[in-house]
Length: 84
Image (cartoon, rainbow, N blue to C red; front, side, top):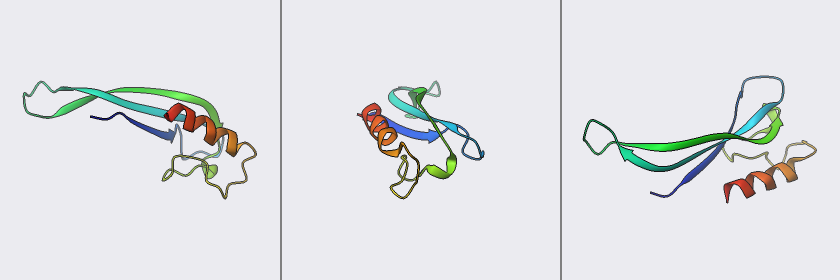
């Protein structure tokens, strides 16, 4: 299984800045039922930036190019570093 990294907002329905979170799924173990159902190991953490939900694209998991956020280039670059 390949590892998966996803980014999301901690509180996407607020009108104040909220932390950008990362969830990293890696490895797995079979569940106790004995069938082939897998339970993945998970690590969640904040990436160090907080933004307004209106400046976030859940589809792209980044600040979109059309956003007027003053630090969008730096934030997106930092997210890409964390992802790689």
